[in-house]
Length: 354
Image (cartoon, rainbow, N blue to C red):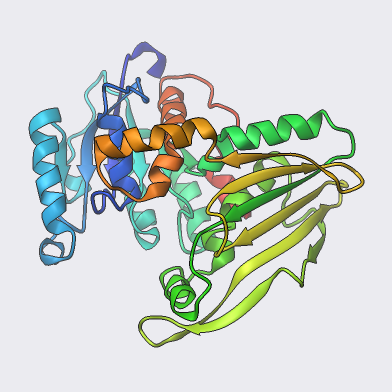
């Protein structure tokens, strides 16, 4: 059984561009043995179908990827390959974990490859697939192979969510609102670029994190929603041209209250042009704010400059959410070794219900 093994071998599928891609940051955390934030996991294989393909070798970012790949191969002995077919079968005493962090459209084939490579548990980056039907087919394939698939909803394991839930549970009749703000400029140019790059829309691309919280912790499902009350004064829907000239219609601000048939009330406030943070807000029955908990918290913000100095000028949210990414990987690696999955790490079945 997995519990007999000391370490888990990691197969990461979809590394992407250094300093920019989530897969690259997963690799960076796993390779940082000084911090050792994932003590039971060791990166063994990186499957990168794009940069290691003929088409990808001349694409933007490939030079940076190649330089980083050569350094990692030399220092850590990690194998970089373009196809799952190049991965040998696990040895008799090897336990494997998969991480799928490529483009959303590629996720079904990358997940299938991790299953074929002998991974017993897989961490799948959200949203996991482009349609619910694909997600359900992926779940069925994993179930047939006796493989557990967990979703990379890092907010589910964040301190601010735990603190919000603790205060709410101890305060009779309290109401919770989850806030999620980006920092885009409130201009047609900036929002048009955002709308085009995130063409699946604000709900699937941004608010999906908060919807995962509602599904995981507040038992909100399609079947038990009694009412959704929109805040029309706050919410705004725009049609804007992206850099290509094509027009996209999406929300740049959205606020609503969800009431379930069981009597639970929970609010969401999402904005593309805001404070660049997330928060859990707890209010009394009279609507007075009791407290709010921020992500990133003070401790994580204080560590960010040191992390940036160590790994380079990566996108800022990697550092802001660094502890949560580590918690997800550590939890899934422990599950591979026979331990119980920590509370809050959702399975793929949660994603298909969103």
